[in-house]
Image 1 (cartoon, rainbow, N blue to C red):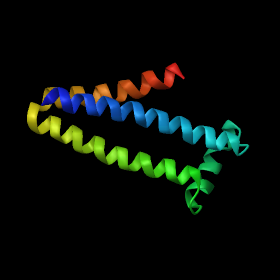
Image 2: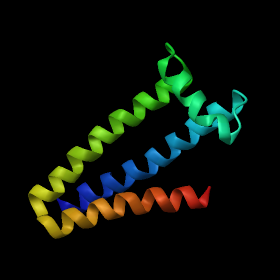
Image 3: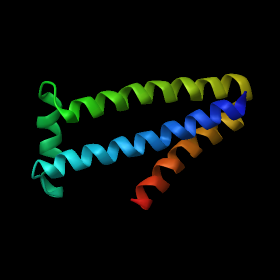
Length: 100
């Protein structure tokens, strides 16, 4: 059971990283340089149905799923593996960001 939860959690980390890349690409395609990205992010979030909002919505759903998976790992495996799963989730995101 724990391996299934861990596998799903790591998959969520990889998908999250991919969605973050899509958000950055949308902002860069809109003409934002890195210094303006924070302002563009605020404008894009307040907009109606934009590609940015769809990607952000998927990320929110993925975050909720990840929280449920982490809670399941804590519930079934205890604190040590639960904390290890949180560390693994962050590590996958960091490694994926470096590999871009």
